[in-house]
Image (cartoon, rainbow, N blue to C red; front, side, top):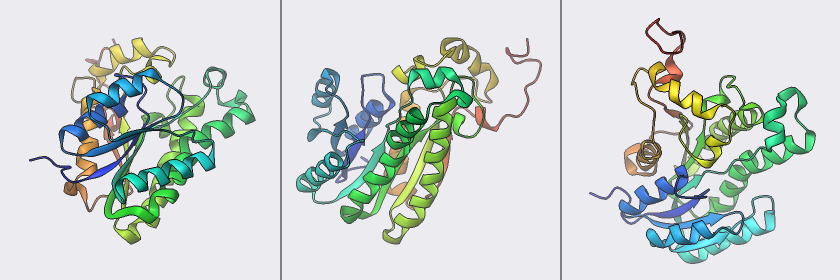
Length: 262
């Protein structure tokens, strides 16, 4: 049984073969979905990857350009008519602002991060709203740094916190058409974005021992959760943040058996 047979939609944020968005695109395609991919900057990877899943189109979309966003959404409507899902996997914070700590965050960096990481979700939903099918699904990606202080995450944590709040309000607005909006808060995985964080390799090495399920997650773990959220199996779930992190987020203290305590 293909859970997305007959469904079509848009996936953003495919950067390379390690991207969570790419794994989502693969799993959606395997389950019968027709997909349009978008990208921000010219990137040889996206066209090679798109061919592997027979993506219907690959569209350039600079989310800092409202006119280009509107044109992209119109092209989606021209191709599909209506859509059943939208996956938001776009985030940005400059390296300098990540390293500087929140207290030294630049105003320009803050505004750009919020525009790309948060407002783009709102603007996409605004543009897609007229041709979202009833029971369509909006899925965004976040991280535990939205809820707690995570070393090195800094400005990105603030942006993800705002994204999770926006998700709740969007769920309320979109619910009038039975459209649902949810966030997946994924544990750390070896993506280009993750590897760029300070002490990432050390963190991911120790983290598994601190989880109730003693394993780190993979891109596919996130993709399978996204599949559930895009399918009719989740049609009464909205406004939620689903943690896919082997249970790390439920822990408050650790026993002496944990490698971090040792």
